[in-house]
Every structure is written in C-alpha cells, then in structure tokens.
Image 1 (cartoon, rainbow, N blue to C red):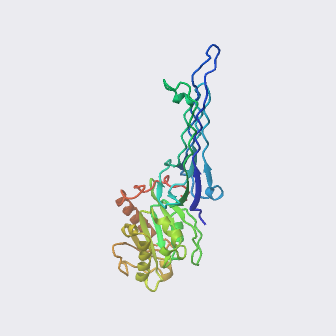
Image 2: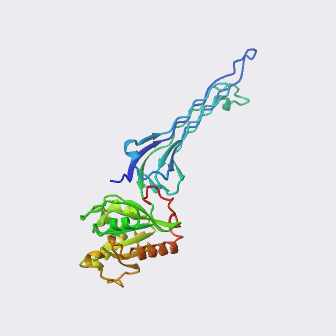
Image 3: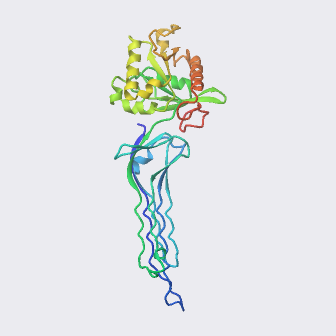
Length: 347
C-alpha cells in the first residue's frame, strides 16, 4: 500500500545558557562581567521535496530533534546557534496537530517550508545584567526549551484529473491507454490498491496528470472498502472523470451512488467539474452511444469509451484538456501541468 500517512514527533533544540564570567587580566584586579549569551536552538522545518512521492521514510523514523544551541562563555563570546533540522516531505503533504486536530500547513509547492517546532532562545550572559548600581552581577539566564509537538502527516496527491468509479470498471486500463503508466490490471475488484499517476500528453508542450485511484463502493465515505484511502486523494484534483460500466443494469443508479459518496465525504466535491463516460464499451460490441442514457445533473457527457480498443479516448482527452484550460484559474496549481509539477508520474 502507498505510505500516505505518518505520525511524527518534532522537538526544537534547546537554547544554550548564558555564562557568568568576569574579566581577569593582569593589572585589572576588578574586571567587569564578560559572560556571553547562549546560542539559539535549531528549529525543525518541513520542506517540500518534489522528488519524494510517499511518506515511507517516516515509517522507520518518527522522532526529529533539532540540535541545541551552545552555551555562552567568557570574554563575551556567544554560543553557536544550533542548525535547523530540515526534513523533506513530498508535495501535497497536509500537516495536522495530532492533539488538537488543527490543520497547520498544506504543503503543495516545491520548496515550500513550514516551521514544525521552533528552537528555544539562548539565555543572556551576566554581561547583559550590568548596571551602574550593579556592576558585578552573578546571574545569567538559562536557555529555553524548544517547541515540541506530535504531528500527523497526510499525503494528498496532486493531479489534474481523478478517475472515479466502482471497482473493475476499466480505470487502470484507461490510464494505461492514455499515458505510459502501467498500473496492475486484472478482472477482479480492488485490483488498484494504491494511487497511480500518469502524464497524459495532449500536444508537445501541453499535458495533464491523471490519477487512477482505488474503486469506490457504497458506504465509502464511512470508510467501507478502501473509501477513505481513495477519497483523500481526489481532494486536490481539478476535474473528476466518472466511469460507469457499459454492462451495468442501472447506470443511473451507479452514478447516483458515486455522487452521494463524494458529496457525503465533503460538500466541496459537489462543485468540482465532472465528465461522465460509459466504460468498457468493447464488451457491448462497440455500440455507438451518441447521448447520455441517464440524467447527468450538471455533469458533462464524455461518450462511450474503451481503454482496450481506444474507442473514444482521443475525443475524451481533448474534452478533458478543454475543460481544464477553461477552469484554469481554480484550485492549487491553477494551470494544467507541463510535466514537471508532480513527482513520480509516468510519461
């Protein structure tokens, strides 16, 4: 299974303590205070690495502690600050506070950073406490502890188009037809157990990313089947391509079930552009279906297609591109991809 969730413990470095020290030089019997400040502790910073695809690295390592700051010393020498600990995460990582459930950051762009645990402040040395009435202070501040918290990381894939449908309706076959991705294909339910990304080229400099995701079943929004494993990954998609099996006895009912699962998971899915197609049309003898045989309720009709024979796939690809460019100013990563926005895709 795709490693798309992880729990980690982040701890900022402790600040170094200030120093209590006095000048001691020949012919200067009563030198003043010269204790230096402690250095600041390092922070733990999550940084988006576009070359990472999963959260697998966080299965074996869950504690991230930044270095502490060094203590101050005499002659007003400040301690060295601890280096920040920069932790790479994949694009599309959602950072959630495990205790409160609050979403802290949504890391979608390459190089984007989030300070997960800030380092502690270094303490002041006794030289800082000298005053005209207190010329020999024998006090210094200790460094403060760094921030600490437990975080939940959730990976939500970034793709332009998400394939939606019941298990075994031809989603993986269609992705392999339109791109160089090669997801597992077999004639049984839940062949796809993890998302697959494929880069679909429209023309030389124009392309979009399509995601093949685990199939939905009724009750998916409550976690049945692979429901939550699927639904979180279509969160960022800008367009939904819904596949209804051409052999279905009641395609209108199938579409209604799929829509209900999407809307029950989150109301935002009700506003996402959608294309509905009849898939696996090669199994019906390739009968032409010029118009939707059921109500679309605001969705667009994409016709009858076959990922096996390629029937209708070129027209569908052009329709998807047209809708993506028309909707180009909505959602993260507004423009369709050019092949470099998402790591781990098959071209």
